[in-house]
Image (tube, rainbow, N blue to C red):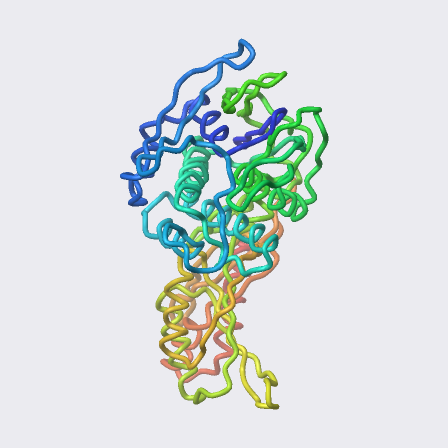
Length: 438
């Protein structure tokens, strides 16, 4: 059975509503407070919760009380671009806080993906790179607590798949850092556009979906629309800030259901489930990966081999180069590094130190991976590891690829003065024979 959750957003979605729904569903507030302390921003806010009524219905309201500034916790748009903001945090700074906080791996990965998605939307609105988007100090604290707290809560509940209803548009206008904005806000529209989110009007002329709420839903939800088939186990109600004609709350339905044909994992389009080291199961076939690129035309080729070694040592999953033609008709090379999001900073540091590049492009993508395991076969020359990959449909496992490990084959070939191809084929034959016997 799969642990499912459904966001019922009849009056929209915001970060504090997500936190309220999670606490209402059983996530301990003290757990969130303790984990969030690792970010190092605890002196700047206080997190608390209380039970409130929305149209006579009980819900949990979570507050982020800002200690440095006496401002009400509101879903305003404290986002700037460019430099020169004395009290601001940009995306790289927030990513550093997350990656160094020692959060649970899923919560960390999901938080990074949500912030990246939010910055991409804001950057698209302002025509700047996501890294140049600055979150005003107040907005950054709000967003960090809401986003990271939500990811921590989903991880604590053990949610495997998250679904979301269609979202109400709201209406009117909202005060932002640079004046009034129409509702839905431009960043919300960009986020909806990125996933082609189904929307509708419920007749309420207020801001119902905030950029933070939209970023959480767009990044983490497997799909939008009707709830999946599930057995309901718990419902959490997260209160919004104001009274509306209908109960202003986000309802989080939690239950179990059979894994269907849909791609599995929270955020199957935006991030996926973390990859295991030795065995990747069918539930983990989609993962978030970072792609770093830079082109170089003035580095000695002798340094490339050393660059590979350094990158793999700091966590790169793969490194490759391609010959390219550059400006002024210079031949050059495109260096591409694939790594997991927490290893971005370390890989970029190596690229800056070991090459002549002045800039690195950064992309967050998803890659689908086959379930695989490492098995060992005993040959007459010694043990050889074999990587076995498969597909699994309707409970039936079909072997797709079998490959002996290169290093093991090379080591035996050198030790016994044998052709590498002969050792490679011997390993394949031994593995096939053992499968037939079993």
